[in-house]
Amino acid sequence: MPRPRQALLSRQRIVEAAAALIDAEGLEGFSTRRLAAELGVRGPSLYNHFATKDEILDAVADSITGQVDVSFFGHVDWREALRRWGHSYRAALAAHPNIVPYLARGPGRRPAALAMADAVYGGLVAAGWPPARATHIGALMRYFVAGSALGSFARGFVEDPGLYAEQYPHLTQAHRLAEHQQRVDEGAFALGLDALVDGLSRTYEAQIGPLPPLPPDGAAY
Image (cartoon, rainbow, N blue to C red):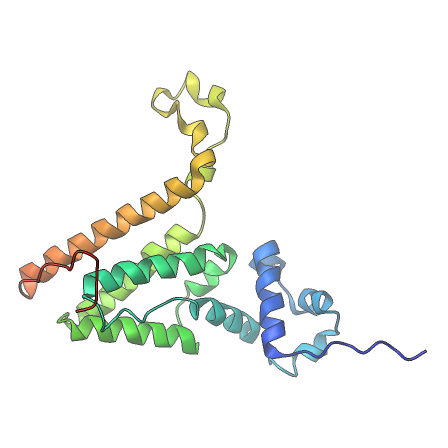
């Protein structure tokens, strides 16, 4: 009987399987041996496409960064661009929180990550921000977004009203937070992002010059 044909590997198939494995088991559970087993191949087969484990991790990280929309910069006011980028950035990272610590190391040589940094930096400089300040804004956005995507604030509270009732009088509704996890976490992020952009707007006006009113619907200018 002929042996069953092994499904051909591709870079895309390896990256998708690696992302799923990291989503399920975390970075600590990821290895080339484990990945090869998931793909039904032997470990050396992976090295026809990626030289090292870190190259695979880079490709996974870059595939996630590639989902972030940066098209707003240069087409809408920088304040609205930051808001839209922030929400898109968080959505991509929050869908894959286990890879966030790896992403937080910086873009390295990853094409999508460098393209994102280039679009944000270029958009901010074109809007009048000095280069150094544009760099600071890109950094603080990464800190803020990555931190928010690492985990859920709401799910950090146990669903046991008895735990809070007697000793923590200001937390008597904390047991309900997990039930409303999405609304709590997304609401907190939106509030923080608005506060961040509002603060940057005040800094811009104090140090650079007046800003025009934003269009009511964030439309392109």
